[in-house]
Length: 489
Image (tube, rainbow, N blue to C red; front, side):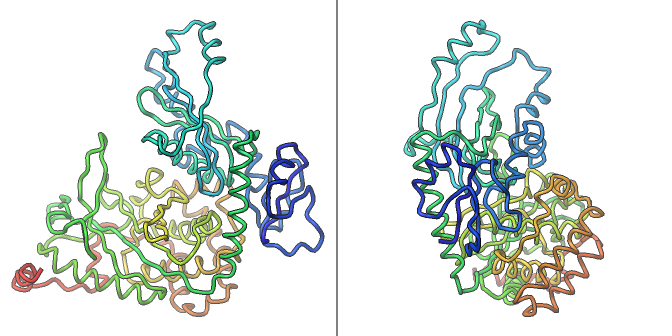
């Protein structure tokens, strides 16, 4: 057993501890040899030198409405306060049509409760409101009845828990009559009914087993990616990639969803063969770029990377990981040790994708069992930057349990990340790199990592208007070669 359940003797905590397969108590035993604490409540010592689920400082901060809403809004999560500011000129004030309470533990939705709301606030008398409040009840939503709003409530709840720097809680969600999903409240240590006791106990026991298995993992993580780039004509117009590329294949087109759920396919995307070797993945990227050059037959078009080389067209440099356990500790390590340093490379336009895109901890589970880390912008500016990102990500994902420095737990650093404040991030990245150099395995790609570090610390922004083919030495095929390629394919 790798975890210890630490609590303050609260009634719910004692009931929960009785269902767990891991040791528990109100004080950490002397000489404890485990790897991670799980805090419940805040009425006990923090044990600051011990890695923990639900850090006490973050849990206490999440209980403060003002601080909570400030953090959520940094991450682009809608709250009642942000919605009210946006809609303050509209009348009458509207109630939510549905409310949810979503129990979350470590990136996982455990159970969802739903309560229907019907009337406008202006249409209710005070007595009607009180009676409605007394009669209304939250009802558990069976998995078979999960709909669009339930899925959205679950997604925003998991995102809110992560954004607040905590790992579990009960999130209150409101769906407005005009379709907005708002985070209304977050309870870091909720009161537990029988159902919540059962699902939290099951989740904690499963976490302990998964964490123990991950610590025993000997094989290296397989790294993949699907970076995006944009095509621009000599006249400065965006040319949609689906003019040349299909949705599938090693090189394809990718979508942007506009308002009204309208889908367009302007982006080109590379999907190189995954590998555990970062340098081999760079070669695979270059090979798929060569394939893209044969498919994109208009050689006059510039290939642009970065975060948002053209306003309204955000680009991502998604990294894929498999043969490892998706967990919040790994996501936070990627945020701190990969996403934060890249801030020093980005141009002024890159920050335009945040926070709708590029928010911290953005991930997507994949059908093959791995996951996609979606926070980064497109890092195709040069082979050095691409190789540096791969080597850094590989080092972090294979050693994240040994990385303890988490500057992004501080609101000021989070704000610096979202606004692209390089001066505030620069010194933090130097400290992060000291931690990285201490890792066993840094020496494998030390030459590349040190060159990448020098490039980062120079704070010279990548040029989002530059054609990346030049940096990658991607030759443009002749018209005859392009025609032959179309025939073969």
